[in-house]
Image (cartoon, rainbow, N blue to C red):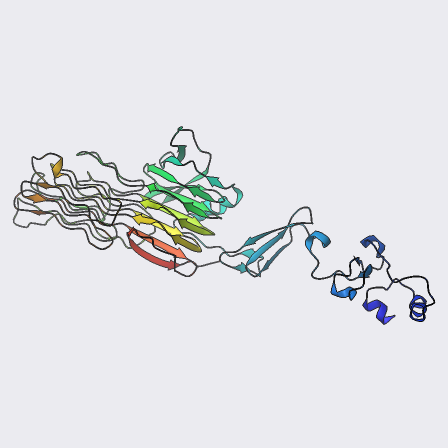
Length: 444
């Protein structure tokens, strides 16, 4: 009987075994064709094909339930979760199928869940909410208003349905955070007063350009990028009279360029805005004095999977200093990307704007706007005054220069924080004019 039990045939009588061995019994040991034929609770499984080890290759044998039995054959407990080899497997309600989700930061075996991380600046709320949303592929061109926190099709002006939250920050603009299980973004033009954010449990892919640059302007029209600021120690200073005093450029990754004063014995009393060290809170580039040139915008991307930048994707240029008052240029913006893996195959640029020149000149006295390359934006020129060039990843913002009239300093280049599972990322691509800081995600 021990041999029979080892094969899972406890329901067969002992005498039958003896008769089989001597060739005198007409009954066979093939006792089942389906599980309901196996009445012994120890051996409830019918191995009709002799597939599993417990049957020893014998067909139609009742055995123990094989530990390697597939879910489709043996089922699973609805809601049961396992975490093996960095894959989270969950039994579905039908008890006959499972979903398998790879854990980019690894499996927390003890808690039967994927490890996650805590995003900066309160973006954990949108990131958590994204798990309940469908994937979102935005139209080829969208217009994003971070003040209203709305996305519209750039061709039809039709509102695009996307989950959104307004995340408040202390002493900084709020973050207009859009969330979905994944995002596929091509081109976006962004305006508004708040920082732009995207959060997804899945991938965030940017194929084209997210334009958060401060736009071209005339004197006195501050048209800053979304989330840029015009108050604080990063904003350029203007000292002295308005005619011959150039303003300091806005600061961000570095200090802004100093403004030149043509009317006093101390030529550079107008300091550029101070460099910024922290990414919490997140805000864009800072304005040049006297705040006629805004800073580039701010963007934060958070994914529990991967962020892939395929195009020349993130533009956060500083504004150009205006003529007439010799304004300092605006600083480039600020970007934060947090994901287990990050690939930058395209480009990122956040150059500072050129400073303006004081004098009775035409548009030539405007500082040049920052451009989509690594070339510094030139300062404006008028009657011997030349504004400072804007900063890039390889050059600091220049001070204004003059023999008589005021000249504004250039705006600082922007900065980016990249946080991944190991502190590394793939790239950058051919264009990367921004000052980089990297860090490691702390999983929990």
